[in-house]
Length: 421
Image (cartoon, rainbow, N blue to C red; front, side, top):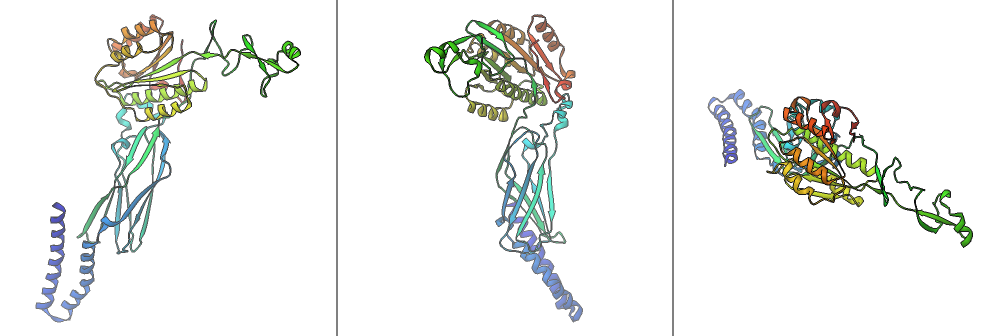
C-alpha cells in the first residue's frame, strides 16, 4: 500500500510540473515560453518513462569463486545484472545485504589478542558500489569478502537503487538470490602428546606411528610384495621352499575421546568458544595423523557422538564443528556426568571447556576414576578467569589431573601447545 501511494505521489508530481510549464507557455505565449516547454519536454518524458520502468524484472545473480573455505579465507564475489530493455539510466547503487553471521571477522590466530574484548571483532560489513550503466544490458560488480568467520552463511538479498539526475524519481528493489558459503574451522598445528600403543600384554608408550613391532610375532604367512626383508622367517622359508614372513601383532591405539563443552551460560565469551572449536578440530586432526582410535563428543543443546572409525566420519565432524553454537539449559557438568556413564571405561578423555562451575570439580573426579587418563583444556582470557576458576585449577593440578590453561598469550601463537604433564 505504501509503495502504491509513493508511486501515485511521484506520478502526480511529474504531471504537475508538466502542466505548470504547459500552462505558462499557453498563457504567456511567445517564442521563449514555448522554447522552454519543448526544451524540457524530453526531460518530462524521461521521468515518466523512468517512473514506469520495471527494475524488478531485472535478472540479478551472484557468483562465488568458492563455496567451501576455511575460516579466515577471502572469497571473491561477482554480482551480475541483466536487463532486457536498455532504458538509459544515470546511476545505479548496488548493495549486498549481509546476514548477521557475517557481521564479524575470524580465522586469524592474531585475533585472539582480543580474547578479553571479543566485541572488537564485530564489524559492520557494507558493500555498496555506484555505477553508471547508461544503455548497457549487462552489468558486473566484483567485490571480495575478507576474513570470513566460521559457520554456514547464506547470502540471499541484493538491494539496487536508481533514479534520475535531479533526484525527483528514485526506484529501489531487493532481489532475492541465494548463495551459501561454508567456512570450516581453521585447523592449526598443535603439539600433541606422544601416542600410547598397547598390546595384549599391556600398554607401552611408542614414538613410532603406523609401524609394526618386531619383538612380538603373532604368526607366519607367505611373502607378499612390500614386506620388509627383515621380516623373513628363514627357518620356515627353508622348510617350505618358499619365502615366508613373520606376521606381527598390530598395535592398538589407546581409545581417546575429545569432549567439547558447547553449553550456554551467562557471560559466555564468544571468542573463547571459537578457540575451543578450533582447538577441538586441531586435536582431532593431530590424532588422525597419529592413527589413534579417537572419538568426538559435543555436549550442548544436543549431545552428539562421532566415533572416528571410518574416514567419512571425519567429514561429519567437520560439518558439525562448522555449524555448532552454544546452547542448552543444563550445565556442562550435569550433562557430562550423564554421558560419561555411557562411555567405555579405560579411555583417555580430553575435555575442552571455557567455563568451570561449582560442580565441575566433583564431576571431573568421577570421570578421572572411570577413565584411564583425563586431560582438561580450559580456554579463557587471563583477565576473565574468576577467583573460583583459579581455585579449581590449583585444586585439580594438586590432585594430579592434567590441566592446560590457554589464554590470549598461548592462542596468539601459530602453534598451540597442549601437554599431558
